[in-house]
Each structure stands twice: as C-alpha cells, then as structure tokens.
Length: 489
Ligand code: ADQ
Image (cartoon, rainbow, N blue to C red):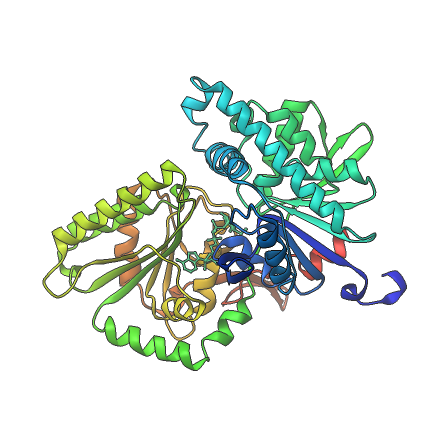
C-alpha cells in the first residue's frame, strides 16, 4: 500500500535456501556452466512473480580458489543468484550430516540414527556445530546483500538458525521462514538433543509457514511442550512478542504445464510414448530417489498386483523415474541398490523376451519429456511414507488434459489434504492395499473418476439447498500468492 506503488517496484525478496536453483559445473579455471536443478523447492518457486527476487544459496560445488569463486559469482549474478561458498568439511558435517542424516529422517518420522545417539555422541555434536557455523555463513552473505526494506524468506530445515542470526544483525529485518517438509508431532521433535535451541532460533522470524494446518499445529505444540511458551490462534507468544505461524499450502504454476502440452516437442514426445507403449496401460512414478518417497514399497505393491492379476501382466508398464540425490550419504547408496535389486527381480520374474513390466531410470527428465509422460499416463503412483506436500501429484493433475488418468496418492503426503477428493488415497505401508488400489485404478476409466480437485458447492434454489460437485484441473498456485501477500505484508 505504500504510495500505491506496485509491489515489485518497492520490495525485493531475498530467497535464502541451502541450494541455489542451479547446479554449477566447472568448465575451466574461470568458466562455469549452469543447469537448473530438479526438486520441489525449485519447482515451487518458479512461479514467484510478485516480487523482484534474488536467490542466496550454495551452488552444490566446492570452489576452494579465489579465481573460481569470482568467476562463479559473476556467472550466477546473471541468473539473479548469489553464492554461499561452503568447503568440503562443512558440507560433510552440516549438509550430509546434521541436515540429511538427522533432521530430514526425524522430520519424516524415521527417527534419529541410533549410532549418532549412542556411540558417536561427538560426531552428533560436531555436526550440530557445523550446522550452526553454516547458518552463520548464510547469514553473513544475506547481511552483506540486504538493503533496507527487503523481505528475507528463509527456506527449510537446513536454515533453522538463520532467522535468529539475521535478527541479531538487524532486528528490523523482515524475516519469514518456511518449512518444506512435515513438522513432526512434538513427541518426535522432543527426542532431538538440540530441540530447544532450534525452536527458539526459528521463533526469531516474524512469520513461520508450513504446508498444512497439522504441521503448524505440531510446531506450536512443540513450542508449548518444549519451551513452555503460549500458543495463540495467531502463533506463538514469548514475553509479549508474537511470532505468527500459519499454513500456506504450496502449489505450482499450473499454466506453465498446460501451455507446455501445446509445444511441438511435447506433442512429438507424446506421439513417441503412445507408439512405444501402445496396447499397454502406463503407470508412472516420478520421485527423487529418497527413502521418504516409498519407492521400494511402491514397486513391491506393483509386484503383488502382477502376482494376483496375471491377465494384466502384458498389458501394463510401470515407468519409475527416480532422480538420484544425496549420493554421498551411505543410506541413499543402500536405497539405490535395494531398488535396483527389487526391479531386477520383478523384471526377471514377469518380463518376456520383448517387454519388461518396470522401466526404472536413475535420472532426471527434462521438462518437455516430463510433461509428455504425465499426459500419457493412465495411473500415477505417489506412495511417499511422509512428504511435506508432493508437487509431482499436482503436476500430473495439471497435465491430464485428454486422458482420464487416476492418481493413487499416499495419505501421508501433504497433497492428500488438497487433492484427497480427486485421488485414490492409500496407506503406502500397506502393500496389499496399494496393490488393490492399482487394480481398481486400472479398471477406472470414466470421466467421473478422473483425478483433479473436487469442489463441493451448496446452491440455494427455491428455499432448498442443492449440493453440486465440480471438478477442476486447477491446483493451488505457488507461494507467495496474492492472498498470502495481502494478509501478511
Ligand atoms: P521434493 O522432495 O523434491 O520437495 P516434490 O514436491 O515431489 O518433492 O517435488 C519434486 C520436483 O522435482 C517436482 O517438480 C518434479 O517434477 C521434479 N522431479 C522429481 N523427480 C524428477 C525427475 N526424475 N526428473 C525431472 N524432474 C523431477 C520438497 C518436499 C516436498 C514439497 C516440496 C515443495 O520434500 O514435500 O512438496 O519440497 O515444498
């Protein structure tokens, strides 16, 4: 509202996340090439159009020399990105260690690693120290680039100390923190040795956001149980200072997907895929290769389905596109081998000389190929054991134009709360239930049962209230959307 000027002319948004939306590959002493990286945060923020945004984060590479750092900083500036340089030791302790080995599994209800709790307490402490140190390095870079009036938006569990460190620099800085994962029940959170310090640091923010109301509720109750603070309908109060806490379900720029379906390359891919899989129903899984995505459970459910439905064996194919992530962490290496082993066994068991039931790819797909795959898919399978939101389910819905595809969706993905009515909800731990859901989905074909968001309208007609259902392919818009900006700016 200041002087009636449009938002983008008066406010800059500094988006701070562990990773920049691009990955850097060194081509020479002072030359770099940059690629857009795959992942939920990147997809979610592609739609940010209301602000002039700059990204601050790690480019995913170790750059020990000054020449390399200068050249990379320059290349990134063209993409509106500002790097934070982390050395190998910090990456190992902060990112692979505290973030991915401790916070990530804990926030997804997989508990704390036993060995860190018991045998190697020192390593737990050194990882925590590195986590704090890395957060301080991010704070230094933000502080260096901050201009008065900027809004700083911190992202995710990697940066829980950032709100506190930024406020220590400048208490007037407007700071928001958004969590992309679930926030677990306070009973889980309170097992974390550094539980109080983390909560207090996040509470230094002005506004804290979660995907769902449940996650926000868990956070407020952790503040009450662990810190003894008062939870109010608006947020958490500490000595007269209120930190607002709210649910902001993240979405995607669905128009981008809908428009892409008209692009000639996508049309060409669609033709190729239809030809390639003619006579077979296409089932699709698109995930980062992560234990929370329930990929082994999904494949085992598909095996059970094939076992129990022999007539479907040569009429269906499962395409599992799993982009590898966190490849340095041993747990992820084990998961990759486990998935390969199960896929090999099933293909050996049910494959023929000319066809295999599962095509498993350890790679990322480009945007056009991905849209085409979503468009030709009959049944999409999202079986996350826990997932903050899950944007793949939204992307599938947005691309289902001509098809009458069905979405099988884990009830433990945040997306189940917005897409629930248009999807077949399953408990991914229950292999039999998922196998039955696959059978049901493959037999579903009518327009009425297609995926999408269903909205119930109550219309008053001559003193009678009539209930009507409409179904839409529109999915929630990305953050920060208009409503969020108006409520909280
Ligand atoms: P992610 O765990 O990365 O995100 P998700 O929300 O499904 O999960 O987003 C993945 C994104 O990466 C999608 O846009 C998808 O298209 C893309 N992607 C995944 N695999 C790919 C592949 N093989 N090839 C190409 N693209 C691929 C985290 C949280 C989620 C939360 C998001 C956003 O874990 O719960 O929804 O952040 O907040």
